Image (tube, rainbow, N blue to C red; front, side, top):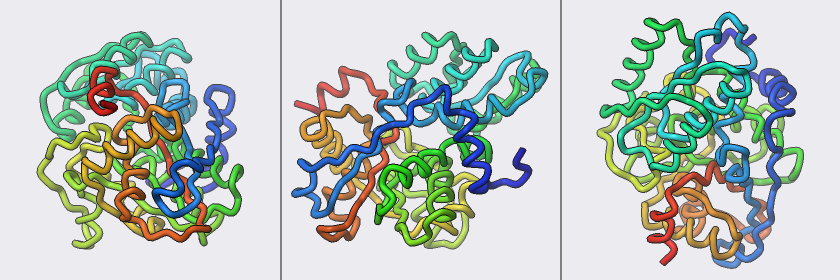
Length: 322
């Protein structure tokens, strides 16, 4: 078991073995149709095709499977904007224990319905991330639930890092990987896997312009909290960088770029039209960044874009695809 606040490459390889029977090794899809518009070779890593429609199942399963039966006997609890909720609900169902998820009132209906359909109890809560976590720990203490943090937990990060191993397995000569940044668990896991295996690969983090917490933290050389603004990328809407992911990101992420909501929407449209993939806004940020020209690329460069999830209300998708 990892005792430090950051996963090692060994932790990530162990996670790969641990979760292998339960997850999909998602394919790496070459997206030739998108290439002309962005000026490089594009490979998509569609975690949208994961069992719960998002990458979060990896970290939730790795953590849950590493806990003892005693630790999870009463149930597991977390807060999430939706995708970690579904991942943890799936893990709890697999292990035959209860899952309780505290989710923001703004969470898309599909994410709530999917979580409940997996048998979890959903508590709607009006408050920022910090307030939601306080609520989680309060409930956990009272009921002796195991807390599974969406991005601070090193075992969760190690689970997300398995995506990095799969990318290198399937495209060993990848040049650049673009990853969405929310709390930072996904990018810290993937960046660790990539940089500790093949340091020459460029790792780029993409953040919505409306929640540029890691971008400003890098400029300020310290974790910087920002007021929460409404971005279309609900899955990345967090006001403060993760405490444990932050130093990993500073160590391994080469560039942090900001993407406007209009470019995120353009990314969603292009993915649907040219790659035949439905991606939620948070997942479309990497393609949005390439379309906006925010990442400097060359025609022969092999760029892998991680599509983190595809859980978004169909009615909202209809508006975007008009």
